[in-house]
Image 1 (cartoon, one colour):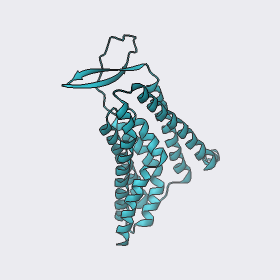
Image 2 (cartoon, one colour):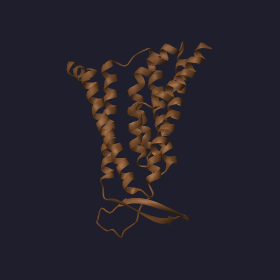
Image 3 (spheres, helix red, strand yellow):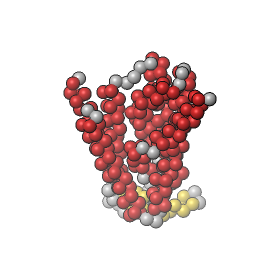
Image 4 (cartoon, one colour):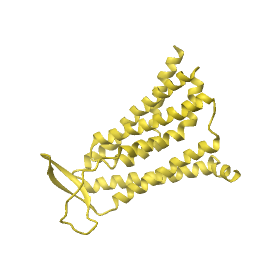
Length: 239
């Protein structure tokens, strides 16, 4: 009964884990690409799945060999998150600074709005492709976050469980909490983008640019903190 109580606590910790700033900021740059609230919500779910699978694989290996990731590697994986945040932010800013405009048309019996650009200068050409929000991209972002958190997750699971199977169960339940938590977060983050997608193009672009800028600034701060405050740069120089 004590273990199952800890498993239940693990689920709640998973929900809380999803709301960490670097997680929310990363998925916000992805949710900003969507004109649909449903797709933005699914992006969070794909993030959670990628995050959980990585934690499960790496955490299980560490539990099996009763090993730990060296501090240098653990901090380096965290540093990779900072690089990813900067890259996601730059990509969002690049998209928002293009000469993009919107127009309405009918497709499949439904009227909808499309944002597109005219790289060749032809403003009368409205041909477009129906591109989907990159769920693969969201999943890969979750994988990177999972790698960065694997060391701490393995320690937490080992301290909670008596067997490797219990440790794996704890990680799965923790992951289920992160999927739920991130699904809720991306729904909340994606709501203003979905509401402004059709009729508030300028506001939509401003919101996307703000998400991109925040990701760049936070990513740069994240790398500085790990490198200086946590001593990662010193560990690299000592190698």
